[in-house]
Image (cartoon, rainbow over the protein chains, first blue to last red):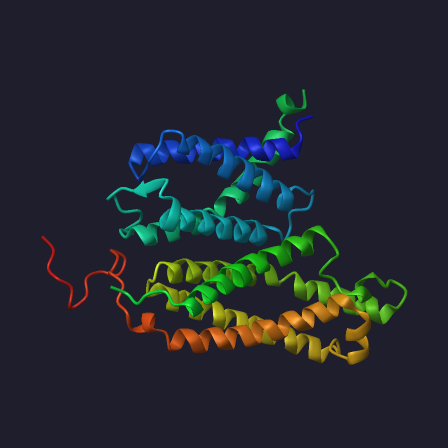
Length: 138
Length: 175
């Protein structure tokens, strides 16, 4: 049986890969090095938001009441990630293309930072589906 | 050019990020994953009055995560924009501080009405003592933050308009 912890990691990797593919297709942001998207998907999506937040908080049977906490922790960590990049790391930069009408780089970082809150939420939903599939149990 | 970040601004940003964002998250993780934040009386199943109070207390507490989400996110946004010396720091900081004060007073009101601040209870129950300290910190932190942000130079600073806001009267014409 596939453990929920590993399913959270896999689900977050899948979500992260989708996000990066869509962002590249829409030309929303560009990385300074080709290695950074891989680090982002494996480390930030997979380990931090998926395994760390998704499993640690949403890894119990009863999910009732935990959803706001999943979003809260995901968004706070997301803002931390975006803030570190915006002010110090500069690992990725925003294109000129607006995101839902938002044009300024600092506002895009803030908006995407909050949107990170959906990552652990979606991870937990997807992970439970993965863990419950017959193929995972085989 | 917006005003430079003073030393007190750095401390304020750290308090908003660590206190408003980090500690609120840590509290709720501890609430759902351990007994660390719970007062001792919730474990007493022998006294019917305390069992009733426990049901009310836990029902009351479990209504807070969604409201605390607003505080954690807006406090983190305020810290984010304060570090970037952007005027939106004042907007999000005031929202976070107002929400923090509001929730602090609701908690204080509940605890007063149910006699949970009784010195005898506070002295023997670490969970209640921690909650009383959190209440005091929430209200005093909110008042300090509102006072600071209202007098902050960023309150009068302009941030460049985003497309969401539309052009302002004094904006230069775009090509």
